[in-house]
Length: 299
Image 1 (tube, rainbow, N blue to C red):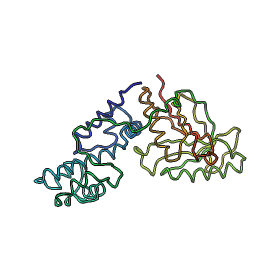
Image 2: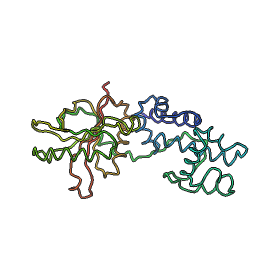
Image 3: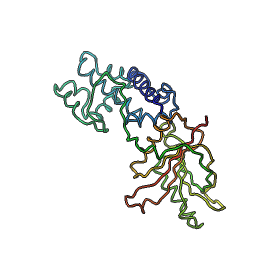
Image 4: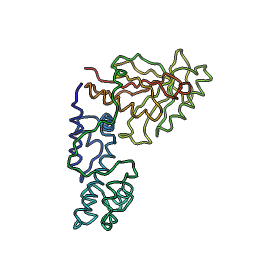
């Protein structure tokens, strides 16, 4: 297995920490790692435990806190600008959300700095650590379930579907419409599939496309919002997981790390999808048995 992706992530961490005063959007950071924004976001999150934008914001706030404490001759607004914040208001809001106190309060109270070093921030980060050793990558996931992931050719899958445009929460409504149609056609009980056409870290949330699908075993006539299509056959990394709803993201992150470690490249011109192999309500632990299918480029 290749560990090249670890070096790439380390390079991005170093780049981020050397350029906190500059624009650091997903496209810029992903370019340093030589990954597409979609693949990089999943991989970075899996390896570090934070999304790229969360990491950037946290490092900006932490460095600002250090400078507020140890460089009292520098005005607060100058520290804010030097750490990538566009205004004093934006800096104060982010700082207070992270630590629960304003930047000015940190300077005024003699024991405030020691308090924030021991206190969990409101956005879920652990104890503040100001450190120059910023290129150590931690393992975020238990990667022991690799035997359930393989690259294989997936068959073509004919489906009926309803497409949802907008936040992921709306997929339930899409499935509701699909199942109402499927019930009238006697199709209830067939396997379901969710296709993801866009990445929320790249595409604006109100433009994200995802499709609720039901596998067809016979020809049917679509109507209204329900359409039919065929998910193309092709080479995919396929991971089988038994997960709760809270573990779906971890399963996806596991897939992306496995793909990187095995030197495969996702084919982002095609949809990524999940196949649901059971009804979670019938599972003793209310778990979903799913297959995550990521199209990969051929050699």
